[in-house]
Image (cartoon, rainbow over all chains, first blue to last red):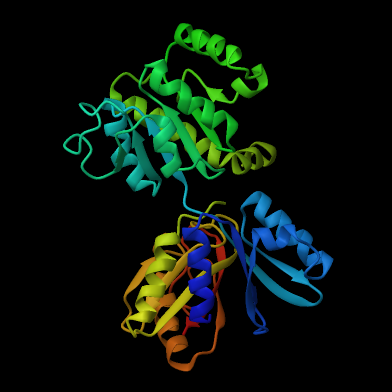
Length: 240
Length: 107
């Protein structure tokens, strides 16, 4: 591979844009297709475009045959981000799990007593209100958003931003009663029940979690199962 | 599958810019129970240092030694690994799966 091509690929990832590295396995070259280029069809023969669209949609790399050539499509999606409101005990437990799962984590909390570097030494910490903080960490479709403060003043504006975004996961801590009140507020703010239904609440897989670390585990478990939903559906179909 | 191999590809770029000979190995096909999905990457330098994985540690040794040849001659090649086979590769996938790995030089 040409170094310039690898550089271009890494630049796309750093800018959080998806792309596909196409390799002719028979030695016929290698090139990069950016998602926005693909949207501006037709730039290449149609059968390949269809395969590229499908690869980007599913996020799955794979080998294909196109016009007698064996091609490998390597889908390069941006690193998955985890954005959390609430510099709370559960968030502290999430830090090490996120690192192990290579989730790029950010903690937002305007309460400086909570959002202190002593409590969160090794993670991006923004001690601002969500409106300001989210300008620095835009929510995109490779982002999981988790609301953990229990305080509607902090959680609600961030949740509203998450519901307006393409985040693949939106979760909010709180009992069914707390969530019912949250739903009322969101309806009042103009969100439909369909939109609100995106929120995972009560948050996390049901593993009977009690401690902050256990709750953090149930949340990351739910994030991973959402991220790999295609794979899970495939397993259910094949029974494997 | 959303890749989490970004750090590996960034490191590959860094290694090349440092003047090291570098090869990239990519899983291009799997059959049966393969430990790492299609698209997984292993980055290797001319001294045999490596990052990432293309299997659960079963065939990395063989990929690294092939990669050192690829770095030397610049010719990309596809390697195939199956169930442990003493005569063919002296390494294999004890899980019973088969994988194809494409190895190319980055320069």
